[in-house]
Image (tube, rainbow, N blue to C red; front, side, top):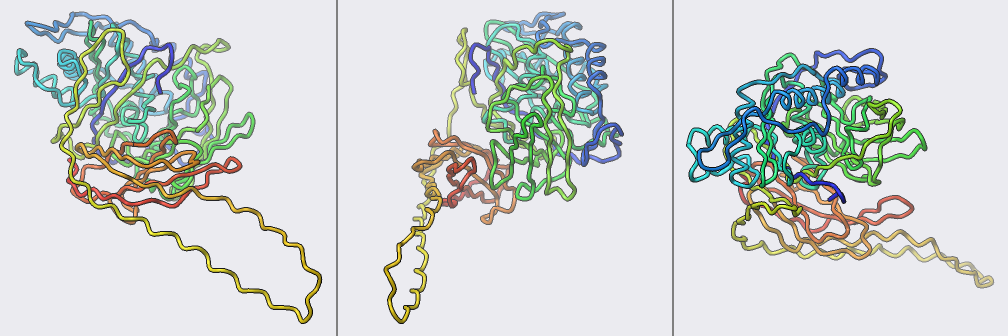
Length: 522
């Protein structure tokens, strides 16, 4: 969703690194949370920490050495003031989340991310696998390409966009259509195993390109799990209206079993989330974006979170139940909250099973026009393959008529016939008409269903939809959707169904035709 009267930042993919975490961390005793293993910090403690480690969302972007973006290229270097502000903000959000908050800057990582920002700026496009500018030194390019492949990266349409805006309202948001199914950027920022990071940025007439190093895993003693955002005590300044909620459990989570109940204490309003029915967006992602087993949910009602709001989260279906309370408050005690996010992420990360990337992902250009024209990449799609013949849906059988009642010996006065209550009509099946494949991205085109309130798409590596299962919600206004499949040499299966709303409840139709993706996903 594009927010009016706000500047827009666009983001692309982070690369995944699968990890396994321990569980030695002991939760603080003054929280009543169950099933999570993170530190608990009071609101006053958070205020004190943020004041001591000062950083503002709008802190300026400044340089110790200015980048040279043409001719004799030079990556440049961010000022100590900007770097210190960025690492302070980074540790602020980790302290709030209850994980290690002593992440340090590393000169090597600063160099990698700074050069990554330069290469992407010169190319005029975001990519984790950037092409080499024709006149750029090979060594300089190789350094930037390595940095781009191991970092969260971002682009802002305006000059001198601050690093902290990218961090809080970009990477920690991740709530756009391309990122919400995995929240890869957020999970890298909140990765308990991180010990070092680095930041880089290049700005000019092409906007601002930035990067944050993500692949550090040197905090080997980390054992936190149940890392939640928003956290138990959550500054409203760092959580926007349309931000998704998430809890990363550090282990695989079965989407078909897990159920989430979100309750607002002020009025008792309840939102329920599961793979079968959800009052908003719901998904589970088990890929290794920092910490796996990420449960993702977002209410279908746009909520402006204000100081004093209290929400209870209850999660079942994990083997042992999870429950915790989120208390929203303001860092500026008693003061009004400033307007929320000014950034909009775009494309979601592709899963990377090993530390060495092997395949170049497709980069989606920004959909938001800018005041200053920027160079946008054109996506060259592979030729469409001949579609498999679609299976004609079999007609649903009607119920057999009930047996006729036995006649009485003598007819009585003709009874008055009272009709039974009209049953709720389920929406018709959704028919997938065609699809296009571009690497691991499948664009699905489907026919609209009359009176549908929305749609659900599910995809799996099993025709029974019990392996690598994912699902996502689709607007009733759409006639197409996009899913991102796991890197695999297996077949993939995709289905859709429609739903209507009756008395506030969703009534789902039957799953429609299945499409089979035989192509190797790379």
